[in-house]
Length: 170
Image 1: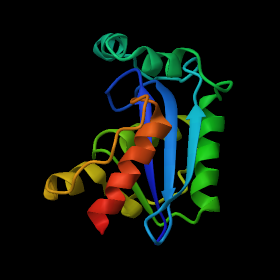
Image 2: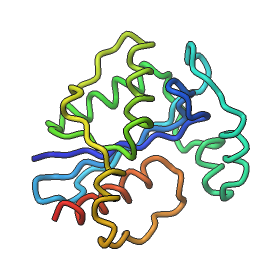
Image 3: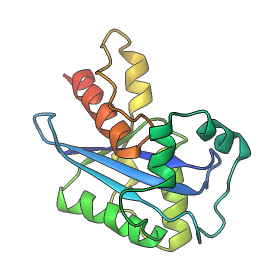
């Protein structure tokens, strides 16, 4: 079974926040991370997306490296529809069968609202969605892997979570 872990960095926690980054880590049938992809997203022009001041203040408290990952991206940020199509391509090209994210009301909900706002259908069905946070809570004895710095860079968090997911599923 091919799985993907998705992590988003945003400017809010509402159901439709401004998305800054999408990170994806693909796990093969042996539960090894075989691909990781980072997509910087242009915060301008995300129709209806919200900015929460508490999240902006939270970002100001993060490390210089974490803040730099959103203020000085390594690549030119993609417009939201282009970023979502890139995410769909990753999922389809890797034949992802399960889509994991940290929480039932965060990343996948944020992406669903973004897909809806852009009129794009996600490459996965809601039946393929899984909650990493729930599995993690059910197995608190499984140790966390070493952090990948900087934290709060979407691809780093996605890979870190995917590595832990692999241990949880073993």
